[in-house]
Length: 244
Image 1 (spheres, rainbow, N blue to C red):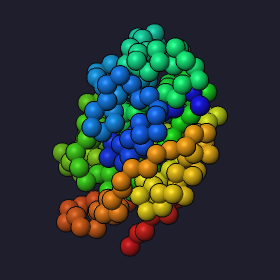
Image 2 (cartoon, helix red, strand yellow):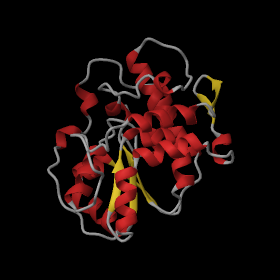
Image 3 (cartoon, one colour):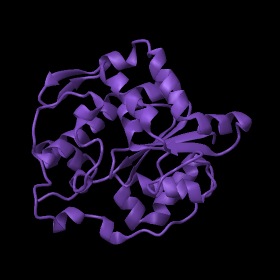
Image 4 (cartoon, one colour):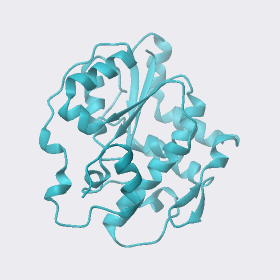
C-alpha cells in the first residue's frame, strides 16, 4: 500500500478509521487533530470552493456534477491540494513503500478531482446512518460556506440533511476509482473483527484495534428533534438501515 484516504461526511465516524490507521503505523501527516484530521485545513477549504464553481445547481436537491469529470483541473486547485498534503506527499516521496494517508471530511467535497489527481490510491468510503450524522454541528452543515448552492433554509437540521445528501450524490456521481471499499461505521462498531478483516485484506496490512462504543450507533433514537427526512429513504434502504 502507498497512499490512502478516507471519504465521508463529517460525523460519519471517520475519526475511528483515521485513529485505526494511525495506530497501525500509517503516517497520517505532520499534524493531526483529535478527530484524526490532517491540519491546518485552510488550503483544503479553499480547494473546495474552487471545485464548487463547476457544480451546477439544478434546483431542489439536484446538482449537475458532469463537468467535474472532464474539464481541466484548475492549476490553483492542484497547488492548494499539494500544499495541504505537503507532509503526506513528502513522506511518500521519501519512501514510496511507506504506509501513508490522510483524513479530513472536506476531502469528500473535492473527491471528483482527488480521484483524477490520485487515481491509483486506496479509497475508503465511510458510511454512517444519516440520522446520526446530522445530530451534531459540522463546518459543512451550511454548504454555502464552500460556495455550493442549495434550497435556502434556516432550519439547521435540514441544512445538515441536505449537506449529507449533496455529499453522497457527489460521491455516487464520480466514476469509481480502481481501489475502493465501502464500510459502514455501524459494522466497524458492532462487528469490529469482521470489518477489520475486510479492511486488512483491502489495505494489505495488519490493523490495530481501538476502543469502540456500541452506544455510538442509533443515537438518533434518543433524539427529540427532527432527524429523518424523506430524501434519506433510498440510502437508508440501500445500506440496510432500520426504518419505521
